Amino acid sequence: IGLDAGDELLDDYRGLNHSVDALRSKERNVRSEVRLLDIRADARPWPEPGRQAIRRVFRNAEPGIVAHVRDEGWGVYLGKGRSGGVGLFLFDKTITLVPEYRLVDYLPANNLSVPIPEQLTTISDPVDDATTIVDSALVEAVNEAVRNLPLPDLDAQIAAYRAELERRNEIARKQQIEELEAVQAQTEELIEMRANHPCHTCPRRKEHQNNLRRVTALERERGRVEQQLRAETLAEEERIRGIIGGIRNVLHRFNYLHRGYPTAKADLLADVFDTNGLVICEMIDRGMVDQLQPADLAEVFSWFAFDRDSRFANSFDLPNQLVLLRRRLEDMEHQILATERGNGLFISNGHNAGFYGAMRAWCNGATMSSIAEKIALSEGDLVLTFNKTIDLMRQVREMIANVAPDHPLRETLSIAERFIKRDIVEQSLALGFLPIASEEAAPEPDDTADALNEG
Image 1 (tube, rainbow, N blue to C red):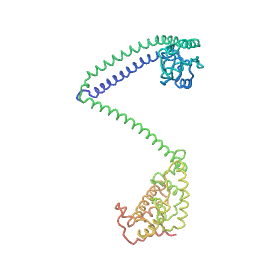
Image 2: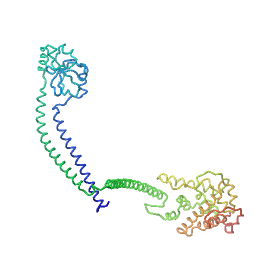
Image 3: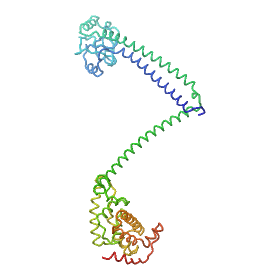
Image 4: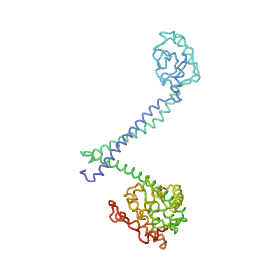
């Protein structure tokens, strides 16, 4: 900003402004407290009646009720008069209008009253001297009746109360005046310091101060965002802990964990990266596909590879052994899905019930166009599903190679992969895209495939 240690100078200058504002606020508070002392000096030593209470008394009051009025003393109610307000009151010889309820500061118990001559009740306007229009003897009789009532000496109470209050207020007033003078002296000193500050005459001071305020606002915003981030992080950590806890419970349920430690069965699941990995590993562990031929084994894995959530026509038929396998598979999936959902997990979704027959036909030599005639899917969808089937079978084959190298399913999976990798499927794997399908006669499966598919 053109000055050495500019940011520090601006902070110092801003601190002076804040101090001046604080002292001025303190000065206003002290002055307000001094005014409160004066207001308290006008208070009464008894609880004053509320406006509603006074209004109820005088709403339908008869002339003669005695009340104490602020700054006037004891008076006798004569009636409403023509000018509104509370009504006309007789104070000694003067008839005065009491305009507001708050001026009535004391009402005797049981609403004490005195007889009022009719001549006084007919007066409708204030009068300085009632004896000029009414016999003085009548006025004196009313005043004498008031003096004979058992009324407290409120004026004496007020005088004693104010004397004691003044004594206490004098000490407080002296302290507040001293404090006020000290605050004023500090304020003047700070104003002088501010006037001599290097930033006070800077032509761009307001711009720089706005920048500092902007920085402060951004720091507050950053603090708020950081706090929100911490809250969201804690919530996410809690959610993840819930997921991990749910996964732990599911793995315990199917014996992949025992008392928190992995079992030998856990090695099956470690190398299968698919949403239905648990279903596939359970299927293999229970030996449900050990006796299948390569084409049938590829068919089973294709049920998990097709992940489209759509309905389509399918006229393929499955042999009885695969129909029975699907039923056993559905029962097992129901157990797994129920356990996952019970722990708040939505990982496995089971095999696709509508996709079947296409992979088995492809492995047995059918062309892509003939398969597409029996199932309402594009050749591109079929090729993508076949490629994913190959990837899923590869994962399982490598897992078996690591866990149980002598497992017979390992060789069957290798043969099934070779059955799938032909023509357009093999081309898509080699080139990374799907070329236009051509009508070519499917090659005859080799002798090994024929032998494994018999029966």
